[in-house]
Amino acid sequence: MRKVAIFGGRFDPPHLGHYWVVRQILDFRPDIGRVILVPAFQHQWKPAVATPEQRMAMLSFHTQKDIAVSDIELQREGVSYTIDTIRALKQEEKAEIFWIVGSDILLEFDRWEKKDELVKEATFLIFPRDPYHLPEKIPQGFEVLSDHRLITSNLSSTVIKQRRKAGLSLKGFVLPEVEQYIVEHGLYT
Image (cartoon, rainbow, N blue to C red):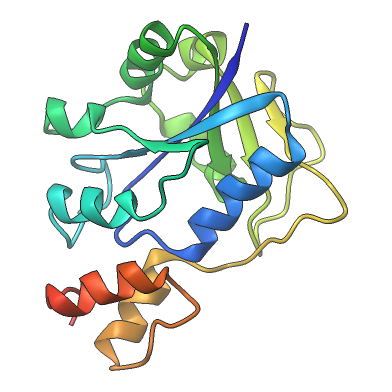
């Protein structure tokens, strides 16, 4: 059975840290043939600044032959739960699903809706994120992406928004097309 990884989030805005995660998963997990980026319509705990349509437009610059974007959660509107997205994409893709999370998410996984069912539906693939260290014992249903060549960072959408608000350049932090989109649409000022 083919394997597909799903990367969900606010992507407000999508940045090169997101891209590095996706690219390295495809590089270091050759068994995973495709990654699908899934922007949330509305995050359960943190509101987005850019509209769902703006975030989808910015994510479209990240697509490649092995990287796609799905609007599945945007179509639902409101808060989407990971369990529903996994089940729908599993059916749509006819594939084994890996859900990408940063090591920072392990701290809040207990708050996720139907977490016990989640690990039965998909494997959670942990990408190390600075400065969040991995616990000694990785929970059942989780795998860690590890390779001595892995590039990790603490780059976040919050940092991008702070730079933009301070009038600093976003060059090297987001794709050039994303920076142009942000400037043209007056986002994050």
